[in-house]
Every structure is written in structure tokens, then in C-alpha cells.
Amino acid sequence: REKARRKRTERERLAKEQHAATYVQARFKAFLVRRRKQHAAATIIQKWVRGYLVRTQIQRHNAAVTIQRHVAGLIVRRRLKKMIKASKTIQQRVRGNQSRKFMKCHFIGATNAAQVLQNCARMWKAKKKAKALRAEKEYQEAMNRAARRLQAAFRGKMGRRKAGGVRDLFMIMQQESAAATRL
Image 1 (tube, helix red, strand yellow):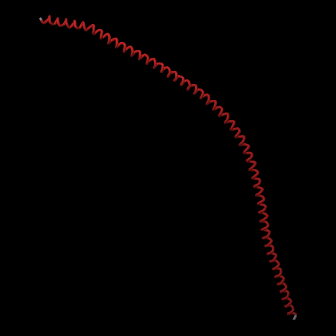
Image 2: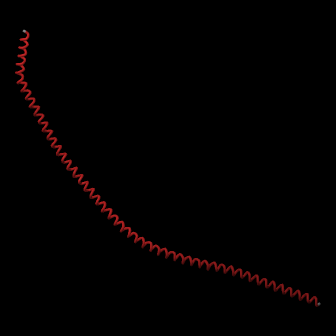
Image 3: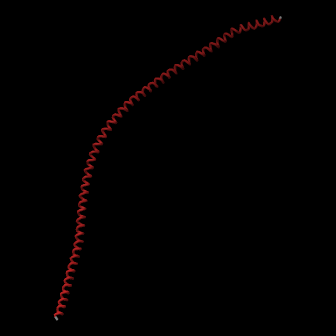
């Protein structure tokens, strides 16, 4: 009996131990499941918080970059404005020098051109005058030639008239001379 009781007690104790072990294991497994769920929830929360922090950091970074970009643009525009003003001043001076140089050369060229035109006009006028004088001289020479021809023709006619009587006389003398030599 004692043995049976011990066995029963032993069985009850083993059952209690097994029940306790099962209970502990179940509690531990539940703890692990809860821990995994909490870990998963913590991971999700961390993911959200880190995403929020990263987005916030990116927004701040983008805001800083935008501010830097605007300030850099402002600085560059100011520099560009100064450079444009300086380049305009340089261009004004260079163009002024070029214009003065051009006008000086143009004035010299215009003066030379005016002189050439004046020389051409004077030469044309002189040629016109010389041509008129030449034409007048040729006209006078033609008139003199014509007068000489007329005089020569007139003198020739007068000479022939005068010579006609001499010729007739000469012919008569020749005939007489020929007749005298025939005899």
C-alpha cells in the first residue's frame, strides 16, 4: 500500500511537474510570442520613427540647400551685375577709341577722296577746255587749209590763164622751130 501510495504520489508529483513544466513552457512560449510581437511592433515603430526622422532631416537639408542656392544665386547675380557694368565701361572705352580712330581714318580718307574728286573735276574741266581749244585750233587750221586751197586754186587758175597765153606762144614757137628744122 505504501508502495502504491508512493507510486501514486510519485505519479501525481510527476503529473504536477509535467503540468507545471507545460505551464511554464506555455508561459515562456507566450512570453516569446509576445516578445516577438513586441519586437515586430517596436521594429515597425522604429521604422516609422526613423522614416520620420530621415524625412525631417531631408526636409531640413533641402531647406538648407534651397537657402544656400538662393544666397549663392544672389551673390552670383551681384557679381554678374558688377561684371556687366565693368564690361560695359570697357566696351564704351574701346568703342570710343575705335570710333575716334575710325573717324580719323575716315576723315583722312574723305579728305583724300575729296582731293581726288577735286583733281578729277579740275582735270575734266581742263580737258574740256583743252578739247575746246583743240577743236577751235583744228577749226582754224581747217579754215586756213580751205583758204589756202581756194587761194591755190584761184592762183592756179590765174596762172593757167596767164600761162595759157604763154603756152600758146610756146606752142607757136615750137611749131615754128619744128618747121624751120624741117626745111
